[in-house]
Length: 623
Image 1: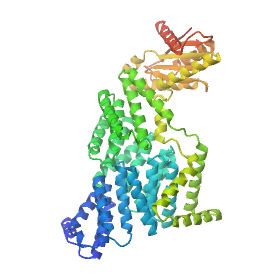
Image 2 (image 1 turned 90 degrees about the horizontal axis):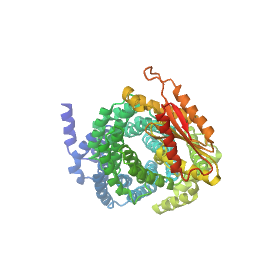
Image 3 (image 1 turned 30 degrees about the vertical axis):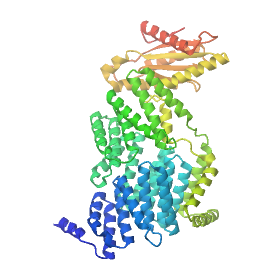
Image 4 (image 1 turned 45 degrees about the vertical axis):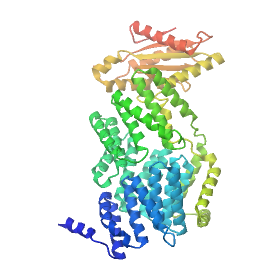
C-alpha cells in the first residue's frame, strides 16, 4: 500500500517551483542509493517540464543526463546534455547548471573515447564555474581535467590539478568532493606504481563518500580497492569486496562497472590459494553479458584480453586464441592514439598474450616474433630516468596536503596560498587555462613521469617468468647474445650451465601440477641465490633452467653447477613419497675463440646436458 501511495505522489504533476525543488531533492537523495529508482521517479515528471522556467528545466535535464552517465548510457547522456546546453543559451546570464551539464557531456565524450571534445567541455564548464565563483564546481572541473591528463599520461599536470582541487575541498569541507578527489588520487598513484599510497587514498575516498551518504559512489572506489588487494595477492580480501558490490548490483545498473567486477572476481577465483576454475569461468561469462551492453570505449578490448589471459591460465588454448584474435582486431581502434595510456598498455598486452599463447601451442616462431616485437616496443618507451626530480615534485605536494589537513601553515606557505588565490582570481576564460597548461608543461617537462604502473609490469613481464619470477626464455637468449659479444670483444671467458629437473613429468603425474610448480619455484630460488650480481639465472622453459656466468672459467662453472645440483638434491620437500629431486646439468665455456657464435655455445651446453641424462642423471657433465 505504501509503495502505491509513493508512486501516486510521483505521478502527480508538480505545480509550483517549491514542489519542483522538493521533488528534485528527493530524486537526488535516491540517486545516492539506487540509480534506477531515481531515474524512474525523475521521468514521471518529464511531460510537465516544459511548463517550468528555463532554469528549472535545465536542472531537470542536468539530473537526467547525470543519471544516464551513472548507468553508463553515455550516448543518451551526451545527446540530452547537448539539447540542454542549446536550451541554456536562452538564459540572460551564465548558469552553474550549464557548467554541470558540460561536465556530464564531457564525461560522456571521455568514456566514448573523444578526449578532445571532453577537454573542451571540461574547460567550458570550469570557465562558467570560475566566473560564478562556485568553488565546489571549480574543484570538480579541476578533477575532471586531472583525470583526463592521467589518461593521456600527463601525470605531472594531473598531480597539479588534483592538489588544487584538494585545497578547495578542504576549504569548503565537502565530504562528497573529498571522496571524489581522493578516489582520483588513488587511481593516479596506482599508475605511478605507489600501490600502498593508492590503497590509502581509496580507503579515504570510500570513508568520505559514506560520510556524505554517497553509497553508490563508494562502490566505484570499492572496485578499485578490490583490484589493489588482488594486485597484492590478497585474493580473499579482493573476493570479499567484489562480492559486496555484486550483492548490490541491482542498485548500481552500470554495465561497465559490473563487467569489471565480475572479471576481477574471475581472476581472484583462479589465483586464490584454493583455486576454483569452474567458478572463474562462470564469472568471466557473466562479465561478458554485462560487457555487451557497456558503451565505454575501452571495455571490449580489456575484456577480450582478460578472457585471453584467463583461458591461457585454464589451458583452454583454442578459446584463448579466439580472444587474442578479438583483442588484435579491437586494437586497430588505438593504432593512431599512441598518447593514450590504454593504447600503450593494450599493445603490450596483445603482444605479451600472443607470445605466451603461441609458445604454449608450440608455435615457437610466432611466439618469438611476438615477444621480440613487444620487447622492441617496450624499450622504445621513455625510461623513468628522472626519479629524483619526480619524487621531489610528489613529496612537495604531499607535504602541502599534510599541512592543509593539519591547518599548520607557516608564513611562507601562507604567502604562497595568497599568491595562488590571486592567480586563480585571474582565471577568467578558457584561453588562460590553455596558456597555463602550456606553461606548466614547459616548466615541468624535466619532471615528467615517464612510465605508468601497467607499462612497467608488462615490461618486467617481457623479461620475467611468471611462475618462478626469474629471467624467462626470451630474456635469457638476449643476455647470452650480449655476454657472448662482450666475451669475444674483450677476450674473456663465458660459461653456460644448462639444467634440467630429472623425471619431472613423473613428479607432475604422481603428485600433481601444484607440487611440480613448487619444485620449479624452489629450484629457481636455489639457483638464483647461488649467482653473483653479474650472473643471470633463468627458466628456459618447462623444467629447464640456464645459468649465464660471464668471466667464469670452466673449472669455476663446474663448481657452481655442482653446488646447484647438491643444494637441490639435499632439499627437503615435505612429501615423504617424493623423496629427493635431482638435476642433470651441462656446463660449457667459451674461451680463446673456441666457438664461432653463441648458438654453437648453447648447442654444446644442451648436448652435455643430455649426456648427463644418458649417464644416469643427477650429475654434471662439462667440456
